Length: 497
Image 1 (cartoon, rainbow, N blue to C red):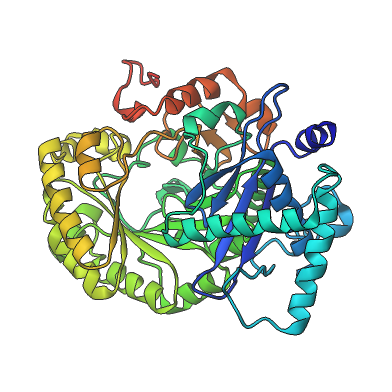
Image 2 (cartoon, rainbow, N blue to C red):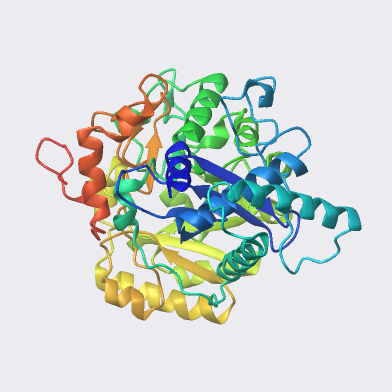
């Protein structure tokens, strides 16, 4: 259909966002990403649900959801659309911010209940307007049919978010299949703090395995608040839906809550060692509406933890975990495993006692400090990692916790599946990329010693994304290769993809 084709051309690479059931335990943050337009191809759009689950949508369902999101955000936000439309000057706030770029738009789900008469009237009006827009593409489709399609789609999304098996046939598609049509990675890691500043060490720890320490792009000049806001704007314009604030140690920046608040349109995450998560700072993060805080914690043994972080920080990190939980922040705790902290079961028991439900574990990334003998000597064998993971899975499944293993290639895929764990793959320049403290683009946040792929403040996004070197790394990732390219280096230090 010509109208459908023109719609897909107009919206190619565009990202839409809205929030359903805000302020409830069933909150849904949806980012709908339209694919790059390729003549003669009909790739699906993607809905990203709470930054975690991916649902491919056919063109007709994507257009239906996009129009509903647009009208919902215009009608139910205070000042304007939540679609972050940068080109319409009348829709921009004082600093170029989208006037309702955060989580304010409210679209109630099927079972939320409690709607007032006025709310029901608003929704009727919203759907009437949205369906009329959709019918410009599909003139023969009745409003009743569109209502049924929307009801089915909402049900599938809510089922996926709740961990239920959807009562619908879903399209089977890998990220590798979708790679040629992606306008950008789904996640960008913003390394807002450097490892050194003014020639001095700029972190409150000296971790034995730090991936950024000693790497060229981990020690560059940090951008200002305004420059990082420009980068956040450019991430939106590129069609990126998730931002992770990392470092270095991002909480070393006093403007961190301001930057996270500025990025409300995105799914936002914070990676931190937890030391500066005081009660007051956690309240600032809550007001900034950060979606998730990942805290690195090495061991329930104070001596082991302090040995691995190079400082006497155990008590402050534990306090940070407790403060984040008390503030109602969504948190997960990450533990990079090595021979020194191999008693992970003890750490899990400790975290469970604090009230932590979500944990991640990884092996060592052989970059930064992990290149040196002190770190390498503590690397675990695959057999030992499997043993630790089995014990950990037995514990978390028995105590209503969730565990993810995040290091590609370190454990056999079949062994991970036998433990009901996802098999991690390399997502460099595909599902994720990173921006160094000076704005330089790198394939991932550990890839800091090679020449950058470009600079987010200086180079057009499409030039960076479509450059031969970026495409080469993305092609490797799209093959679902189960090893980290940084573990297989040429003699000159360049990547070997």
